[in-house]
Image (tube, rainbow, N blue to C red):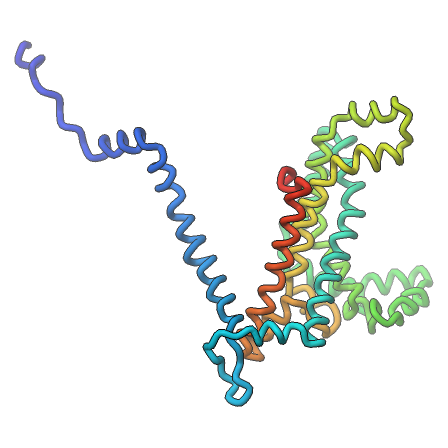
Length: 314
């Protein structure tokens, strides 16, 4: 028994020593945990992005059609040509219009869910908002192309209601019209709005959930009319959520090229320009310069959104 008691402890294994090291040095443990995703983000994602953006400081030789690997800002000057500037302005206008419409439509839905929906009705609300996100992106876009086509459901509905003259009058308008809704800017707008609307509703609903009902009741007790309560109490408190939702709707519309490729006119948007210049046109520097535009716009947009407290509602 004495010999057994005097026996020295067994030597500790490598795993035990490593566990003690990580326990005593929490910073090393955190570093090891974040190192793989940080390397992936830094090398694969940001590295590829910087490689693309570096191409924007080169230019195409007008005689050979090859890329001249010499530093120049000439490619950025091409963005200010009338045709390219129209693409930028058209895309920003579309993104702003979709964002504004999503806020106007999404706010009442979010307000009802935050204030009145309870139990199974709130579950149905989340299901109804999230259900379109579960289906294929391309399936949704092509479905809308069939709905908006000249022989589609919407045209049939107008014909059934004897309102074909109204649809034809709208399609004859110079900017928003076309041969049918599926080949018009109105069709592009409707599909953008449908696809990105859930990204506006959910942050707005989350912001409205944080508004105490007692504040709205106190406003009414102090003599404020419903419109005054909305302008001076509810809207300022919900604004961070609306701005947070607008980050998604604005940025996703700004860079999308599939929807305007399938539904809409032949006029290009920024996403289509990037795709076509780096593909069929073979002008990678100009495609890279176009890719910089949404980055700069969203940089300014995110700065303004941060100042308005939008990140607190994400």
